[in-house]
Every structure is written in structure tokens, then in C-alpha cells.
Image (cartoon, rainbow, N blue to C red; front, side, top):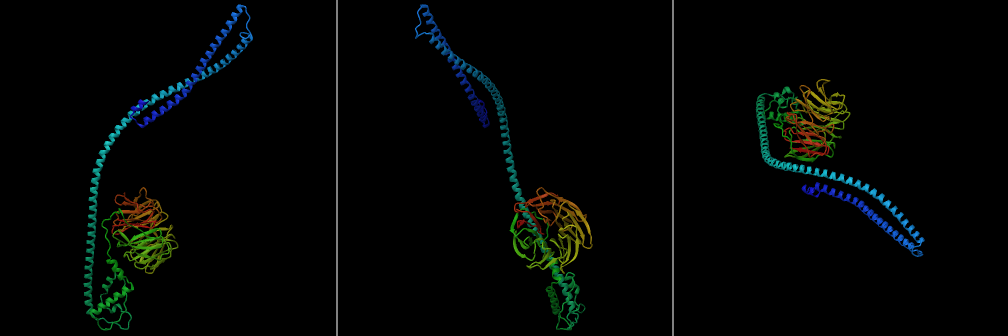
Amino acid sequence: MAEAAGSGGGGSWKRHIVRQLQLRDRAQSGRFLDVVQAYTKLLEKSSLLVHFTEKLQAESFDLQAPRSGRETNGSTLEPGLGSPEALQALKIKYQGQIAEMKGVSGELAYRIIELSKLLKAKECKLQEQKTRLASLSGRISELEAEYQQLKGRAEDLGNGNCARKAEYDVLHERYRLREGELRRAAEKEQELIESLVRKKVEAAEHQNKKNERVKQARLSRELKKATKRTVSIDVESDELKPAEVKVPVRELVELEGCEKLWKRPFRSASATSMTLARCVDVFKGLLDFRLKRGNSITSGSEVRYRSMPICLVTCLPSRVSDVQEAHFSEVNAVKFSPSSGVLATGGADSLIRLWNVAGGRLESLQTLEGANGSITSIEFDPSGCQILAAAYNNAAQLWHIGDYKSKETLTGHADKVTAAKFRSTRLQAVTGSRDRTVKEWDLCRGACCRTINVFSYCNDVVCCDNVIVSGHHDKKIRFWDSRGPRCTEVIPVKGKVTSLHISQDQMHLLSCSRDNTLKVIDLKMNNVRQVFRADGFRCGSDWTKAIFSPDKSYVLVGSSDGSLYLWNMESGKLETILSGEHRASVNAVAWCFSGQCVVSVDQAKKVVLWK
């Protein structure tokens, strides 16, 4: 066994087998040693018995010989040496010893027989162990051969791995170089995009200035013509009638965005004529009065000339730029202003916080108060000057940017308001509630102008042209014509609808539902065009929001595990998963209109800016 172990290369498994065999050999030898010792003792006792038997026979012969000699000589036996009584006693004594020795001999013979049987059984077992040892030795030889074969294969694989490692190192170096080139190309692309955007903005500003100069020139010509006419003014009248002022009213209507002309009460010291300077002063006074009264001339010019970001190419978010703990409780809603420079977040602490997004950082600007319930939805008006929010206090709140208190409260719902959106203008809004109604509002009067009754409570609404789209708890998306009383279309989905988002070209609608899928609906055909799903994505709540990218190339949504899932609209495949920062379910996401950054909010009070 030792030789077999030595020939096995000193492996641990060989030494283990040899050690087990040695232990078994010692155990078996110990058992047979007891048998051998018992057998040896039996032999010694047998020899002793034979010796006693021979001695007794000799003594009996010696006793019989003197007595026969004495009888021959005719002499009488001496009483002390060979009397019959003594001989009889000696005979009885020896017969007892012989009987005792026979009993001992029988016991020893019976024990010898038993030990012989046990010895035969041990010999059989020993033979079996020898046979098993021989088979194990053969198995050891086979395993040694297999070990040598595996060792050779391992050496070959090691050599192959070294070659693959060298190839991997070369490829990794090439990848690093290509990645650097890609990064430089992306930076250059970003610079070109920014340069193009700047040029477009400069071109737009130049065109605006040019249009303003043309308009000023036309207005100057009209004013010069007006100075040549006589204007009659009623000194006692409180209002200047439009027919009495011979000025270009059409030009003012164009400047005011085609809104109704307000009447300006004023008095003049001259009752017969107006110079050019006086006419200009009158028009300045008229415009100043309209600004003070809050007429639509200001808002019209703001909407017309407001600088809007242009999204040429959407930049995919890849890293965390900033993290803020924005609210005292979970954050439910987030929205970028149309200019992409201001971000609004709303939470369960009934607050709306405004943030300045600059240099990859979030800087707190303002906190809007006035809502008496959790904020569930936020929306900027087209000009970015007002914020409309839905709250759990059965109402929607309207704020002006810069005011700390709510300007208007839209009451009328009987349950929590889950969504509030502006229509095509800032003077109309739509709200959805859990009281199974959708309401249209006139913000000028702060009154409800239409109520739509639905069979299920509404989770979200969107508006496009004359159509209102609502998503409901009964797994259906409904389309309503604002000019008619009935529902025009119903699209069923397989889960409770949590959010709706319409693309900027108003061609497609994105829905998110509790069956952990996102669906893209073609608004021309009113059918489901694409369905997005992924392993690991779970819709975390009934108000989880999903959005399109500004150029409609991607779809983005947050999951219950804190990850952001982004799909490619063209290929329909999962583009990337952003994870690592959120530790709770992501409630909503927002993509700035310039396409440069993304913001996500979660149930752990966090606001994360991605670049």
C-alpha cells in the first residue's frame, strides 16, 4: 500500500486511502491478536494437562511396582508406606484431579472450537478486505491515470488562457483608445450642437429684432400719418370712443395678439389737435395702463417672443450630476419649465419647490405654499409663468411664478385630484379626480365649464387640440371631444393606467400601467403601436409617470427597485438601465425640453439630476 501511495505522486487523496487501509489493518490485527493469544493459552493448558496425565501414570506405576515386590517377598506392608487406606485415598485424590482436568479440557476444547469458527470468519473477512484492497488499488491506478490526463488538459487550458489573456489585453487597450476617441467625438458633437443652438438662437433674436424694426417703422409711418389728422376729444367724457381716435387701431390689435382692445380713459389739455410727441405719449399711456391692468398684450408678446430651447439630438443620461433631498416626505411629481432652466417638484408635504438647473447642479429658488394636501401632478403653462398642481385636498391650485401664495383654487371635485393639465392656452385647464369625473376649467373666471362623468376614477389626463385623453383605474384609456358630450374612443389595456404622456408632435401617446408595461398609441389610428417591457421593471405605484424624450427617440420610466429604464423607440429594445442612486421606488421622471438632462424623484425624498 505504501508503494501504491508513493507511486501516486504523493496526492492527498492517495495518502488518505493509505491511511484508512493502515487503520483498518491495525483494527483487524488487534482482533485476530486476541484470538491467537487465546489459542496459545489453550495450547499451554493442553500441554499442562498432558504433563499431569503422564505424571499420574508414572506415579501409579511406581506405586504398583513396590507392592508387587513386597508381596513376592512374602513380607507384610508397612502401615506408613503402602497401606491400602493410603493408596485408596491417593487414588481418590488423583481421580478427582483427573475428573477436574477432563472438565477443564472439555471446556477448553469447546472454546477452541468456537475460536476456530471465529478464526475462519475472520479469515473470510480478511480475504474480502484483501479483495477489496486489490480493487481499490486498481481504482487508484485508474484515478492516477485519469489525474495525469486531467493534469495535461489543465496545462493545455492554462496555455490557452494565457493566449486569450494576451488577446484580451490587446482588445482592452484598443477598446480604451476607441472609448477615448468616442468621448472626444461626443464632446465635439456636444460643442457642435451647442454652437448650432447658439446660432439658431442668435438667428431667432436677429429675426425678432428685424421684425421689431419693421414693426416699429410701420408704426412710425402710421403715427406720422395720424399726426396729419385732426383728433377731436370730448373733455367731459370719461372714455375715449374708438371712432373719435383716428389712429391705426389695426396695428394695436396685431401687437396685442388679436385680443379685444381695452378703452383707456384719459384727458388732454388740447381739444383741437395732437402733435406727434403727444400722440406717442398717449399710446405709451395706453400701453402702460394695459400692463397695469394685466391685459393679454403682455402675455401675448411674452408667448410670441419667449426663447424656447431647440432639441436637435437627445443626449442619453449616463451619470448622476446632483442629488438633493427636496421635501420632507416622498416626492410625487416633477416637471421642467418650457425654457428648461427651472425645475418644479411636488411632494406629499404639500409643497412645490422651484429649482434653478445650471452647471449640472440644482439650486433652490422658491417654495410655493397654499396646497392643503399631497401634490400629485405639476404642469407649467406654455409661457412658463404659471404652475398648475393637483392635490389631495379635492382641488387644483394655480400659482404665478414669483408669488409665494396660491393665486387660484379650483374646487368642485368630491375626491382627490390626481391630474391637472393646461389646454393649448394658459386660460384653460383640465383636471381628473378619483370622484370619477374629468372637469374643464375657465381660468379667467376660475370656474368649471364642463364636467365629464366616467365609470372609473381617473389617474392621469393629457390634452391635444380638441381632444382630452384620460387614463383610468378600470384598465382603459378614453378619448373625449371637447366639442361633444360623449366618449369618442376607448382603448383597453391589461393593467391600471398610472400615467399618460403625449409627444410634442401630438402623434403618439405613451401610457404606463400596473401590468409592468409601457404602450405607445398611434393617435391617428387609435391603436397600440408598440409595447415595452423588461425583466426587472416593476411599476411601483398608481401614480408612476413615464415620458417620451423631447425628440421622441426614447421612452423613460422609473421602477420600484429605484432603477430608470430607457427604451429605444426605433428598435423597440431596452437601451440602458440607470441605477445606483435611488434606494426607493421612483415615482416620476422629467426630461428637459433641450434634451440635455433628466431628473427623477422617488419615495425617499430624493431628487436626482442625470446628465
